[in-house]
Length: 121
Image (cartoon, rainbow, N blue to C red; front, side, top):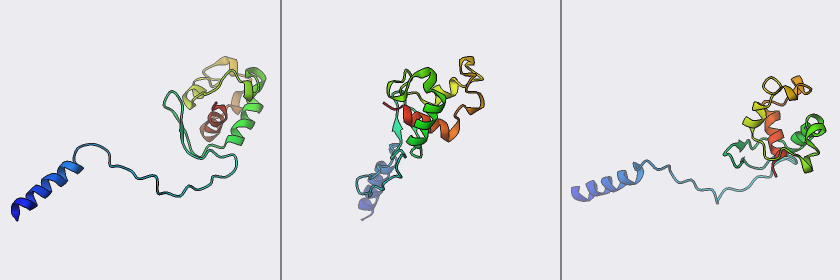
């Protein structure tokens, strides 16, 4: 009896203490529809940066049209597809004088995440 108990404890501890993350079940969850224009889930760019699930695609498209399209072409043919939050931040007017015309309107925070969502190709 004690041998079985010890064997069971050793097996149990080896299964939970291996250092690997616990498995996560995802198939059973019901998918909930997102509001129109909102991203439905976090997506990953080629550089590993994620677009927050709360990004608003419509707001990002409007921000691009208002702030970027004059120099970088319309969104459909933009010269700046798939930009990440880090890339947008690195090109803020304070860091890149060519964007001085945008000035204080430069998107940050949630607005920058919206812009990233709009730039996904």
